[in-house]
Length: 473
Image (tube, rainbow, N blue to C red; front, top):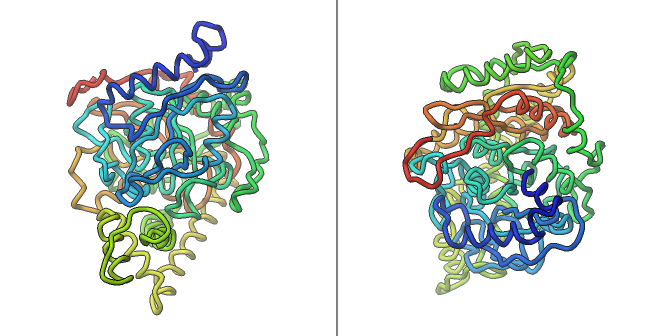
């Protein structure tokens, strides 16, 4: 990370980079990536990320900044404590310079469901940055910060990373604490880093991966850190590495240029000594419907707390039923209400077995199928998304088309395995990401493999034009 090297060498004062980033963001944010900015203090001495400015998605609790989830419901909400991931970043000396825009309550694939308006893609202001962590992705791609945190429930780190031409990682489920992160679907939500390179993501992972007694889903990671050291020490000789390419990710619905870029990435790995083979994961086609039943059911439960009584906005009515109805009708956007209704229906008496329980069984089948694949292969290689970034407004009125943007990323969340997206090339002037998936706790290996790819290629080095609306590089 160039900024970190400059700070360590004395070229930059410890607080100078963060102060400059915060001032620049508050003065000019052409992508609409930020919802709030902070007035950064000088970092404490020491720390592995001392002085590095970073941004956090606006569903992570911050005691000194609003945490809105890009929703009217929490427009004026400021938490009384920091999320564990924020505490860990602060203890490393990293400096939070702002909170990033997102799809409302992390429900969306384009950053267009935000109550505060959409974020625009730095590569072309007429297309979406992806979602739901689109603000974090745009902030990194536009050079506003070198590092950002996002959350990934069904691809919400990897899909915007692909659309914005950066590296984004969803770690193994439970590797990073979710304490203080406002929940969407608790069994799949995962915090992860977004940066220009795999090496920079590894630096963040060294800070963030830690067992947290305050999160019952947090686990002890067998690697126990040392991700950056492993990445930097990795060999470019991939002899003995076996990579599977599931044919279901290369079929109908995947744009031809996207497929070709993934195939080119496979040839890069093959030239470095890896064995590449086509495999089949036949239950992949059921991942999308299973995900939307399960995630919507969990969302309907998690969002039941926003009733106008405890916290958040309140719309008075003639009685308690009116208060609930008015608050939730006016506080939530259309996509959030759609998923609450779907989830409530799936959990209702008479439909639980037919929908939620069946989806949970399908989830187990998909996870077991992926686990079997990892008995023969070290990693899986697929496109991150079926298409490049699509125009703003194109899919807002077509939920099914919007949901299809996550078809390649959802299986990793259902299985709880680590996965990342890295820049693989360009189509029509827009970035195209390539996805790597690995077995549980192979986070370090995934980052090392991505780093080898980035040492061999230069896609991650290309940067968008500086805020010229509608202009492609």
